[in-house]
Length: 452
Length: 66
Image (cartoon, rainbow over all chains, first blue to last red; front, side, top):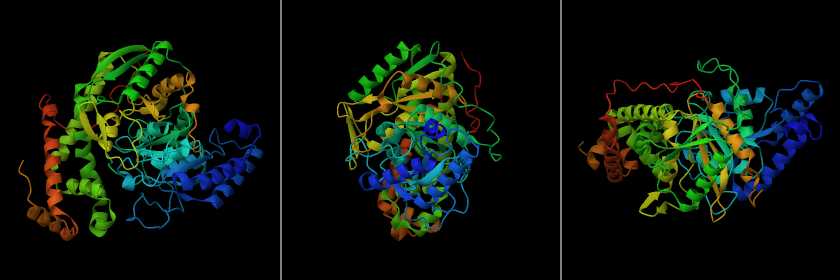
């Protein structure tokens, strides 16, 4: 798209008009958008076309239509968080990431539907473009669905226990949760400030890298941000790279369709140069207990006023999590934070001991559940859908490590499977390089769903 | 750890300024018990190491290995 814009084969206004038409046409089917703002998008696109004509080029995102998850502030648009407890008052300022994306020339066409309060994996009423009776994952379900349906090449998501990688995996697109605190969360409604991350969901790994670069910008409020290049290793290949294949809890059990597809992806990574080492990290068995010990109290603290004023307008499951967060002793929260440190140290030891550059896992142990499905059945276990999804993604929220999901095939029902790449802290470029190397030798990311 | 009764939950909610009549306190008591049991499993993880703080710094290794 970006190349076509520069070659004057297409204009930003034309690209935006196509995205807007597609968003309106498909929203009845997949329900990905909470808000579509045709007028402001077309005005922005016209201005960006004029800039390009006059010689001002803001970079790869110049004139590219994108969408924003509706927990992130965009000036002039309300932030509803998928909840009736939020007002329709428009935000008075852009979130830092939104400001940076605008500076880089992105055209904002609208806001996507999240799971209520960004706290869940169903994202009702959004539907999965690969199968309309299936959920799109969450909480960034609207963002993944609109990218999978080809409406926009990138949409912003957020990830506290897997909320970028879960929908990316079940919708067959790429999504990265960068290193903790590398991308500013200022201007996004928190769920759990110790675990929240913002990142892109995109049509390809390269688009993820270019988007992250734009999102980074210059944020004076975040001292850890420094000059860096997320695209630096996109073409470095995998030759000599040491890859840990993570086995055992919490990645097992998994559905056979996922296991077969994952093993094939690992074989492919070896063929293109990665050195494979099988590893286990037993401490990760405690992922769910640690994750919920932290999310509950932090989310409850942030939403306590909503709980007091709108108790009838919050989903019962979320209400239970929030109330538990308010009522459980503080020692349980502190145990969660201690467990987080132990888990992060255990992953570090694994990287160091085996001299690993990356770790790979299946993003999820199962593909998309149906929209009303509550549990997954495994050989010796029945498990709630939410726990099943979060157990393989949350270890890397707890440890703050960069984690990317890339499409790696389909199960026997035609639903996408995701491959997760995890890197050392601040090694987002290594993760993106490995993901891009894999993607470059496969065609899974080029497959399109029937609804597009 | 001792479990809360439904009445105790109602008292706690009222003290926090939450309208206890709007919540199913029996259900909350059950949920809290389950979460406490889950949290107690963390003991297995935490007894093996001396943990002096909960300070978290993800920037533990910046060097590249290749």
